[in-house]
Amino acid sequence: MTSSDSSALKRLADQLPGAALGVTVEGSRISVSGAPGMPIPQKAADWLMHQAPAIWPNTPHGEARPTLLFGIVKDAGPTRANLPLDTTLKAVLDEKLPGDSPQQHQALAAAMRSKFWGTATGKRTTKKRTHYLLPLHSRLPLSFVQTTAEGSKTPFRYKMFRGTVLPFLLSTPSGDVDRGLLERFLEVFANDQDLTVLDKKVLEIAAEISPGPDDLQADTLIASSQGVLQRLQEAGGAFCAASLEQFRRDLGQVLSLDLPRRDLIHQLTMLLALHLATRLYRAGLVLSRRLDECIALFPGGGKADADEVSCVRDCCGDLEGCDLSGRMLFRTGSGSFRGVKLTEPCVTSYRELTSKYLLPLPVTINTANLARDALRAAGGPKIPASDLVALHAALTADDSLRHRFDAVTRLLAVCHLYQLRGNSAVGAEAPHDMPGLHALRSALLQSRRTVMRREGRDVVHQLVKDVRTGRLIASNGNAAVFFELDEDMLHLLVRLVCGNKLVAWDDFLRGLQRYGLAPQNSAEEQLLQKALSRLGMLKRYSDAGESAYVHHSDASQEEEL
Image (cartoon, rainbow, N blue to C red; front, top):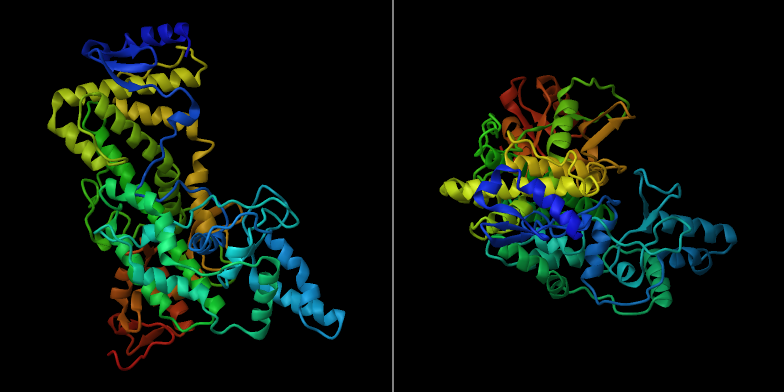
């Protein structure tokens, strides 16, 4: 910032109400009563404060779901440089696999490619289709790197979640990682059970191309996650510890399934996708409401959401009582086209949760972190990143601190608008009747509208929408996007809610609410029952509603009554 720019910004700052409290601009810093309160971010990247160690291990970006497990397994093994591309393995299968004729070679190679590679179905910036090498065995992710597109020679770099996401989700309130579950998870990819002769032949070919160790170690993955886990503890533990406890319980259930390797890996992928997607929705909803609670402390801030909420002031510790409980109103997929009205709850609830809470999640976190720095600059206590509960408590306890904080956040908003307008004071003023925290959030929204979807909505869509099976979100072309459970996701949820028991219908619905889910209306409940009956997962002992029981298809139907 040049001296002339600094002078223009200072003149603008001195016109604000906070100037009477000594809040102004001195060079490239905001000063409070003569003390150097905090530096003013100078570049666009400096304003992007996405640190949310209690929410996620790293800021995610939308990328295909098949990369989730590949990245976890890769980070659990030894680091190796200059690995060949997965297309190298794919190209030699025609020559290396057994067969008595070229036709047999090609047929076997095609079968192995369809087994060892998956295809992303979502929209991509490139027109080329991308085939993702699946981690059917640890040798594959430890020996090859993915390519960005079919026929490309550019290595793929993971943009959604790194391998640290699993230790993060397995972290306990005591600060440890559930090592037992982590070792059971890695064993799925390290053992040779149920591998066919052809599977082993593919792995032998892979070892010839890229020889090296393929051992997986829980300690390796935990060690690579130490930075993430340390920041998590400094933040006071994970956001919504109850959801992580549920993940650990659910992962144990899925790992106990007696399934062929590829099917088990598919179930693990869906489980991760379900929990990560609902976590982002939960964080978007709760953090946004907590921010509204902080804004409501100031004149002109309005009132916080009038709905009954449980997690605004602190986590309720019970997923059935969470703000997200039962808010994701879904319909049941029928396997064929089914029209949808824009007024149906499955559409309106998706729009509300996605547009109002999920899309602005990066801005909500950004605002919370800048507010943390502003609180410190105003003479307040040091609080963890994105801790809006601690921010609310500090502002409530001290009136003079609250006034200084309001002045600092308003000036931050003005500084950001000033930079957005090319260091011009025209239109950079923040409305005097708007709290500084609200003005700051509004200013950040102006600069993030075109990119914030990549860190929220696109991630959720890649997890549970733009996939062939295991969907939680569907669309009818461009007309409507809505919550809908396909058969694969419904199978998984029945397994998670019911385990090996018969569960009464009302208890089953309460179990779905822990994942934020609920049928969109009473008619949809009947359709859900019909779908479960068709799948062999509903047992009726009379026509009365209370005599309907849900069970997984392999559970005993008599012994549990």
